[in-house]
Image 1 (spheres, rainbow, N blue to C red):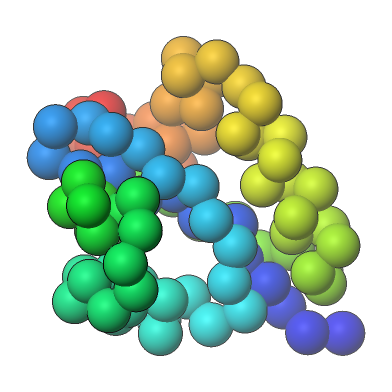
Image 2: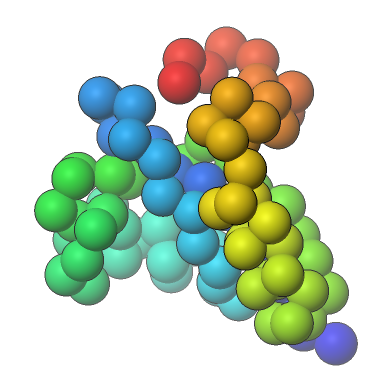
Length: 88
């Protein structure tokens, strides 16, 4: 089974974006170079602050939806647990 990633990226002004990818390095390159127009490029969101590996696309999408459905404070908890120095 192929590994997928659920990730959270942030902008300098603390805007968050949650996404899914099967190639996190490529996807972060796309965010940083603003290759794909949309929310993250519009708001300059390009700083990886959290990611987790999941098995398969279905699990990734379910986890993404769960994270998106959380209050901001709950989204920040996993970021701070894995990345204690990060200011969101």
